[in-house]
Image 1: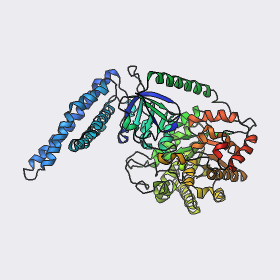
Image 2 (image 1 turned 90 degrees about the vertical axis):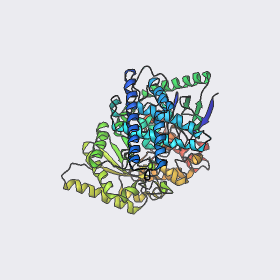
Image 3 (image 1 turned 45 degrees about the vertical axis):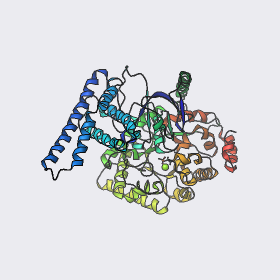
Length: 584
Ligand code: PEP
Ligand code: MG
């Protein structure tokens, strides 16, 4: 019987595939397919890991035994026996083999998939003693994974988790997880999945943002989907409606297959607009920029016809590295790759914005991640100013990358004049340090993000110090409406057209234009086609969004007349319920 689960639509399109249920902590194992002739060597890799772990356990048992009967801990000895038994467990061994032989998963993926299958069975057990054995199984599997991590796979594609296309693998796979951190998502970006569903998450959570940047269908906030869906179930993800259909009937499969093909035709049609200038009917030139997370995303930005990068979220270079931050050389090379990748077009690099729903590491406790209200805590520029040595490393790396092409430097989450002054002093210090060391660097334009109401209400202060402003509507909405952007329980209150939000946005745009300073929007509003007319009507001429959204927004722009939209936008601004006027 088909069941449908409702969540939040975060990334458009339809995905149809088999479910792979993954605990978020296990997403960062490699996920790739092996060729038929590599199946045996993958099984051998597992056997090797299992034997090595068994040997380790036996060694510990011997050392306990050597301690003599009085010092040996009988519980520990018994526990090690359980671990040995679990290692040899038929269900684990044959299950893992099944995923490798029948589905061509690489060894690590097969092992974590089978772990999920067995872990669920443990969860359903009545006997609390047996239920607790789940933790032992997880430990045993973790030891095997650790062992495999130390031994390079002979078949992993370039050491990365990428898809190897194998004609024997027919069904696409979709990933189902309780939660995925943005760092998990980065792994996921290079993997084989055609779509994903999470139990938690809001529309503009960073997990959703990365999904959008990957341009694959995704639904978040689909509560308990990871419990209701079973490993290998057929699943349809409707990323337009925010619906997940489990075990769909043949009629539904045919219907969604048709929708999927329609989506492909629409994309094909839009791709013809790539080289068309973004100019409105009344001749207004509109700048369409790309938001990127990694230097390699510059390729997609150019392919979509972006005229520059409006937001490079540099924090993705800092995440998922077990606390070891990238040094100046590594950052310089990453920024330089983005700059060179954009082939002379400007790249706006935002300084690190970790904290809140973008922890440096899963379970780590830096950057305010373990505080009660992380979104109000030590995130973004606050963290950078609290760690000036780290910040100077990043500033020097960015200034050096500017020697290879036009770079703009963007600072997130400023609210106080004192923060502005401290930041600019550090930028100057970084310049001096490079000058003193005789290292090449170049001038960068300086920009501030307007994403805290306090900043939006003191625009003249920002215009005194900065060359341009960029409105981060994701956070501006979160902080104006007091809605946690990552919490699906309040996502119905997250309203981009709330009159308070629109007033802050409109007055920011107006004041920048009056002073002749550049202003863009780089939050998710910029890539939402249902808001393009309104933003144009409010005077916005520069939009920054995921490359996958650029062509659809351009199509809207080509149909708009800004002189007409201006009057209408003023009526939306004055309305008690602006959403009601949005379809006019
Ligand atoms: C924003 O807040 O709108 C923004 C672009 O920054 P981020 O989504 O990375 O917080
Ligand atoms: Mg922000």
